[in-house]
Amino acid sequence: MAVTADSQRLDAQRIRADFPYLEELQDGKTLAYLDSAASTQKPRQVLDAMTRFYETSYANVHRGVYRLAERATEELESAREKVCALLNAPSAREVVFVRNATEGINLVAYSWGLNELGPGDVVLVTELEHHSNFVPWQYVAARTGAAFRMLPLGEHGELRLDLLDEVAGSDTVKVVAVGLTSNSLGTNNPVEQLAAWAHERGAIVVGDAAQAAPHRALDVQTIGCDFVALSGHKMCGPSGAGALWGRAELLERMEPFLLGGHMIRSVGDETTTWGALPHKFEAGTAPMAEAVGFGAAIDYLSAIGFDAIEQHEHELVTHALGALGELPWVTTYGPPPERRAGIVSFNVDGVHPHDVAQILDMEAVAIRAGHHCCQPLMRKLGVVATNRASFYLYTIPDEIDRLVAGLHRARHVFA
Ligand SMILES: Cc1ncc(COP(=O)(O)O)c(C=O)c1O
Image (cartoon, rainbow, N blue to C red; front, top):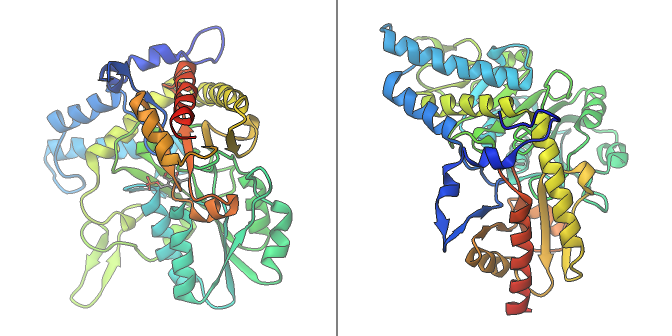
């Protein structure tokens, strides 16, 4: 177990032994991988579970009556139960496997939005949103004639809940789309409060949990969202498997998103009826091995404990903000450590973020530079791009110190 007995502190050094990427050296150095908000590295336990599935349980699911196919189906459904438990969802029927959070949100925007929205309705997003929880809503609003509005941010990149009534006016807000945690600034948003406001007005709430689910325990029965989307690859799982949770009564009423095999009840020459939940939303062959890997990742993270992971990231982000705060030529963005996940966006005076990231790569430090799929936020901050360092359970303070040393070098070279 990689959590020390005396407290809920996580033992990152022991955890690192599970991650093969750390065995590969870059220019003789261990890679300081500080881009976990984009995608996380994978532990052996996840890779082994997928290999085992391919070697011993592989067949197409929900189709065959032979034992191998039944075993494959059981493995997929067991992974669904794990996602259900992760989110404390009332039923695994409410958990739909999708490729990633983007697909989950598109599913809701198309299947719910195209049918429920119209002229006179308001779609409300926030200035913090990732494009995945912004563009589908902007598009569906335009297609249906609904108004598309943004809740502004305050000084530290936090939502201005005090402006909600003003932004809505006397119009009918039908949906509020909000990220639980910002991928650019790390801000943990007060989603429960926002959901209470939305529900009072009869709106549904679509929560983008792509950056929250990897880092803290979530409970869809208390968080106030009607839908929650997440990506397995951002929480030690493989690419290609994510999940959408939705309230059964909403999912039941919705039209399917993708059409084809597996999602039907019966196909007539003229019309087709849809299968039961969640299959109505799972057309075609499922991401089977990916779902099994996602389930193994949930087991892995749950054994360590989300409280320990959150605490570890809090310590890292406090360390990073402290160290960056001592450099007068570095600007950091976002709230104080208490209200953010392990993500830090910053800029170095006079040095383009891409140049910073390139210099850091020479030091075997991997960070992200760009708009982070948040162009509305970048406009709000008045920048075209930022650097972003993001941490996870395998990150250690020494890697943040290497980042800071690399920034000194970047400044020396460019500024
Ligand atoms: C907050 C947030 N939402 C959505 C996404 C989209 O995730 P994916 O690319 O896995 O669909 C990301 C990815 O960075 C994200 O950070």
